[in-house]
Length: 157
Image (cartoon, rainbow, N blue to C red):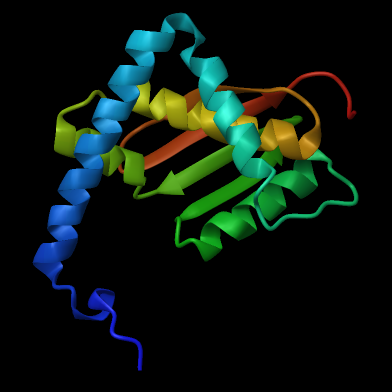
Protein backbone atom coordinates (compact mmCIF):
# COMPACT_ATOMS: atom_id res chain seq x y z
CA UNK A 1 0.00 0.00 0.00
CA UNK A 2 1.28 3.43 -0.88
CA UNK A 3 1.28 5.83 2.04
CA UNK A 4 -0.23 9.05 0.66
CA UNK A 5 -1.09 12.11 2.68
CA UNK A 6 -3.67 13.15 0.04
CA UNK A 7 -6.05 10.49 1.29
CA UNK A 8 -6.10 11.98 4.79
CA UNK A 9 -6.64 15.65 3.91
CA UNK A 10 -9.45 17.44 5.70
CA UNK A 11 -11.85 20.13 4.48
CA UNK A 12 -9.72 22.63 6.40
CA UNK A 13 -6.63 21.45 4.46
CA UNK A 14 -8.49 22.05 1.18
CA UNK A 15 -9.64 25.51 2.31
CA UNK A 16 -6.07 26.47 3.23
CA UNK A 17 -4.86 25.23 -0.15
CA UNK A 18 -7.54 27.27 -1.93
CA UNK A 19 -6.48 30.42 -0.07
CA UNK A 20 -2.85 29.76 -1.04
CA UNK A 21 -3.76 29.17 -4.70
CA UNK A 22 -5.79 32.41 -4.70
CA UNK A 23 -2.83 34.33 -3.32
CA UNK A 24 -0.44 32.79 -5.84
CA UNK A 25 -2.72 33.46 -8.80
CA UNK A 26 -3.23 37.07 -7.67
CA UNK A 27 0.54 37.59 -7.41
CA UNK A 28 1.11 35.81 -10.73
CA UNK A 29 -1.38 38.02 -12.60
CA UNK A 30 -0.06 41.19 -10.96
CA UNK A 31 3.55 40.30 -11.71
CA UNK A 32 2.80 39.50 -15.34
CA UNK A 33 0.98 42.82 -15.77
CA UNK A 34 3.87 44.75 -14.21
CA UNK A 35 6.58 43.08 -16.30
CA UNK A 36 4.76 42.52 -19.58
CA UNK A 37 2.31 45.42 -19.58
CA UNK A 38 0.23 45.76 -22.73
CA UNK A 39 1.61 42.48 -24.08
CA UNK A 40 -0.14 40.52 -21.31
CA UNK A 41 -2.81 39.15 -23.71
CA UNK A 42 -0.05 37.87 -26.02
CA UNK A 43 1.62 36.07 -23.12
CA UNK A 44 -1.69 34.43 -22.11
CA UNK A 45 -2.28 33.34 -25.73
CA UNK A 46 1.24 31.89 -25.91
CA UNK A 47 0.62 29.96 -22.67
CA UNK A 48 -2.65 28.65 -24.10
CA UNK A 49 -0.92 27.55 -27.30
CA UNK A 50 1.72 25.71 -25.27
CA UNK A 51 -1.00 24.03 -23.22
CA UNK A 52 -2.88 22.94 -26.36
CA UNK A 53 0.19 21.14 -27.60
CA UNK A 54 0.09 19.00 -24.46
CA UNK A 55 -3.64 18.26 -24.30
CA UNK A 56 -4.86 14.73 -25.04
CA UNK A 57 -6.51 15.94 -28.25
CA UNK A 58 -5.85 14.75 -31.79
CA UNK A 59 -7.92 16.36 -34.52
CA UNK A 60 -7.94 15.13 -38.10
CA UNK A 61 -10.28 17.98 -39.04
CA UNK A 62 -9.31 20.98 -36.86
CA UNK A 63 -12.35 23.15 -37.49
CA UNK A 64 -13.44 25.55 -34.76
CA UNK A 65 -16.48 23.30 -34.19
CA UNK A 66 -14.42 20.13 -33.73
CA UNK A 67 -11.77 21.92 -31.67
CA UNK A 68 -14.36 23.44 -29.35
CA UNK A 69 -16.07 20.08 -28.89
CA UNK A 70 -12.79 18.39 -27.96
CA UNK A 71 -11.70 21.20 -25.64
CA UNK A 72 -15.03 21.05 -23.81
CA UNK A 73 -14.71 17.27 -23.53
CA UNK A 74 -11.22 17.49 -22.00
CA UNK A 75 -12.09 20.32 -19.59
CA UNK A 76 -15.19 18.46 -18.38
CA UNK A 77 -12.97 15.48 -17.55
CA UNK A 78 -11.03 17.93 -15.35
CA UNK A 79 -14.34 18.74 -13.57
CA UNK A 80 -14.75 22.23 -15.07
CA UNK A 81 -18.44 23.04 -15.49
CA UNK A 82 -18.18 24.24 -19.07
CA UNK A 83 -20.36 24.29 -22.17
CA UNK A 84 -19.68 25.70 -25.59
CA UNK A 85 -21.23 25.97 -28.99
CA UNK A 86 -20.65 27.79 -32.23
CA UNK A 87 -22.81 30.78 -33.25
CA UNK A 88 -22.17 32.62 -36.52
CA UNK A 89 -18.59 31.38 -36.72
CA UNK A 90 -17.71 32.30 -33.13
CA UNK A 91 -17.29 29.94 -30.19
CA UNK A 92 -19.54 30.85 -27.27
CA UNK A 93 -18.24 29.42 -24.00
CA UNK A 94 -20.17 29.31 -20.72
CA UNK A 95 -18.55 28.33 -17.42
CA UNK A 96 -20.83 27.65 -14.48
CA UNK A 97 -19.29 28.38 -11.09
CA UNK A 98 -16.09 29.70 -12.64
CA UNK A 99 -13.01 28.90 -10.53
CA UNK A 100 -11.38 32.19 -11.60
CA UNK A 101 -14.44 34.01 -10.20
CA UNK A 102 -13.87 32.29 -6.86
CA UNK A 103 -10.26 33.47 -6.86
CA UNK A 104 -11.33 37.03 -7.74
CA UNK A 105 -13.86 37.09 -4.90
CA UNK A 106 -11.36 35.67 -2.42
CA UNK A 107 -8.70 38.25 -3.36
CA UNK A 108 -11.17 41.14 -3.89
CA UNK A 109 -10.19 41.38 -7.55
CA UNK A 110 -12.57 42.83 -10.13
CA UNK A 111 -14.72 40.36 -12.01
CA UNK A 112 -13.84 40.75 -15.68
CA UNK A 113 -10.55 42.24 -14.52
CA UNK A 114 -7.04 41.09 -15.29
CA UNK A 115 -7.39 37.51 -14.07
CA UNK A 116 -10.56 36.93 -16.07
CA UNK A 117 -9.12 38.54 -19.19
CA UNK A 118 -5.93 36.48 -18.92
CA UNK A 119 -8.00 33.31 -18.62
CA UNK A 120 -10.08 34.24 -21.68
CA UNK A 121 -6.91 34.92 -23.72
CA UNK A 122 -5.44 31.66 -22.41
CA UNK A 123 -8.45 29.74 -23.74
CA UNK A 124 -8.19 31.74 -26.99
CA UNK A 125 -4.59 30.53 -27.28
CA UNK A 126 -5.66 26.92 -26.79
CA UNK A 127 -8.30 27.26 -29.49
CA UNK A 128 -5.90 29.11 -31.81
CA UNK A 129 -3.44 26.25 -31.58
CA UNK A 130 -6.10 23.59 -32.08
CA UNK A 131 -7.68 25.31 -35.09
CA UNK A 132 -4.63 26.94 -36.66
CA UNK A 133 -6.57 30.22 -36.63
CA UNK A 134 -6.08 33.21 -34.33
CA UNK A 135 -8.96 33.67 -31.87
CA UNK A 136 -9.93 36.86 -30.06
CA UNK A 137 -12.01 36.71 -26.86
CA UNK A 138 -14.85 39.02 -25.91
CA UNK A 139 -16.48 38.85 -22.47
CA UNK A 140 -20.25 38.43 -22.62
CA UNK A 141 -21.13 38.07 -18.92
CA UNK A 142 -19.44 37.66 -15.54
CA UNK A 143 -20.82 36.47 -12.22
CA UNK A 144 -21.72 33.04 -10.92
CA UNK A 145 -21.55 32.00 -14.56
CA UNK A 146 -19.01 33.42 -16.99
CA UNK A 147 -19.62 33.68 -20.72
CA UNK A 148 -17.26 34.77 -23.42
CA UNK A 149 -16.95 34.28 -27.13
CA UNK A 150 -13.99 33.62 -29.39
CA UNK A 151 -14.00 35.14 -32.85
CA UNK A 152 -11.71 33.37 -35.33
CA UNK A 153 -9.64 35.11 -37.98
CA UNK A 154 -8.62 33.82 -41.39
CA UNK A 155 -8.86 30.33 -42.75
CA UNK A 156 -7.39 27.06 -41.61
CA UNK A 157 -3.65 26.54 -41.88
